[in-house]
Image (cartoon, rainbow, N blue to C red):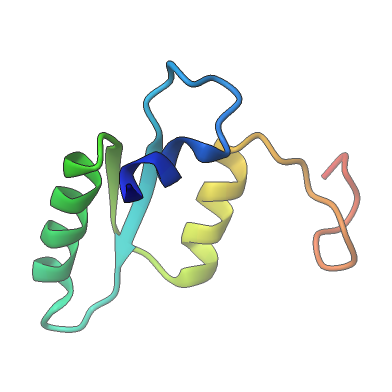
Length: 80
């Protein structure tokens, strides 16, 4: 089922997937965040609520949590 997709790309099948979540300032944001967090929990994951963030801010958090060093033409030098 769909819950197996969360574990599909993991190197450690015993590790619980962590899903980073954030929302914007729209009125529906808090409700949608609550639904997303419940959905991640139902699928066996660990949701982390970062509150109000822009998409680039959340993207940075995800890249850093994955341990990916900056690379490619839009990320600058690895040592940054």
